[in-house]
Image (tube, rainbow, N blue to C red):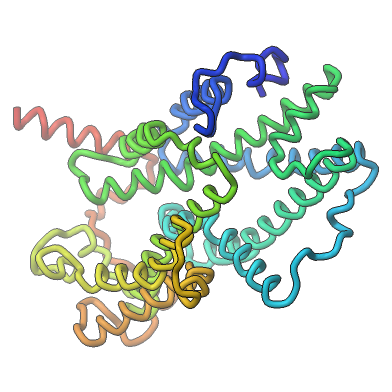
Amino acid sequence: MIRSIWLSWDRKTIPNSFPEGSGTTTADYVSFFLFWLLSLPAIWFPVHKIRHLFTVKAYFVPCAGIAFLIWALVRAGGPGPIVRQKASVEGTDLAWQFIKGVMSSIANFATLIVNDPDFSRFSTKPRDALWSQLFTIPIGFAITSLIGILVSSSSVIIYPGSEPIWDPLDLLERFIDDASSGQRFGVFIISLAFALAQLGTNIAANSVSAGTDMTALLPRFINIRRGGYICAAVGLAMCPYTLLTSSNQFTTYLSSYSVFLSSIAGVMCSDYYLVRRGYLEIRELYDARKTGPYFYTYGFHWRAYAAYISGILINVVGFAGAVNGGNVPIGATYIYNFNFFCGFIISGGMYWALCKLFPVPACSDTWMEVGDQIDEVRLAYDQSSSQQEEFDEEADIGNKYDKSHQKSV
């Protein structure tokens, strides 16, 4: 975006103070820091208000992606040779590459799989969250992948003698080198769409989810807003650009997502669908009494932890081989190639078995999901507090904490 306005903003001409192989340059880091800084105000808004950002993203980003595709195809005069060339691998190797591609796609939204309740809780009925995701996720990923392949293939014709440019941002940067002022404006609009898409992903997959988890751990001190800003600080401190030093390192990083998050998803789904059959004592969820059904053993649900660890262990050997490049048994590598499914099935099955051997309270023998068989739910609030008024959840929790802190002082 910056270079489409000022051509002098070029990583090749701006002096670089970062070492070789760090994954970034001075120009790239400043751009990253500006994006990080400008994204901070979006974290301030409550979840039910930030939905307007996603509404704008839903209209703007797909249109920009299709425009980018048309622009690349028009300049190339066709989709390029990649879509017509034969597969470079066959048989078993082709099958494993396909599986790895599927696992990489799942790993790309593994965070959203685990943190989906942070957003689906705002739906009026369970089916509202089901059908919208059932179609949009696979169709969206398929269309996005197709656009990426066609655009990359066209780059071979646009710039003869070069390798396919698989990063769309790199291709946009090449467009700037020989672009007119109008074309640079087009690059700016498409780059803006990429920035908006990344902002939405950061909020949905990182800020809201981290804030919600931290609120559950320390509700007296942290709310969703404060947790989001803590997540932003950690994201800056971890130097994420080091993950982009090579494509192999980035895909390994995505695979590690599947190793750890698949076990969490397996426990969550097994608990809700198999063990409790959709039944929840909503009032008790907000009660910390030792006699409550969700207090478990001294406040810890050891069955869930045991199942979570078992789901990680099934993949840990293959994961170690992928990270270090060491020699590991071929069977461990095959298991790791199915990392998300293996972790999900093992952790979910282990949790179900442990809950059968050591039963937990607040379960149902029949399906009892709210919004299906159950019409009325016992809430943890008084009738007088259920007025239809809009409130700021983060500000409300923060004010309660400030008042209690003042009293203690």
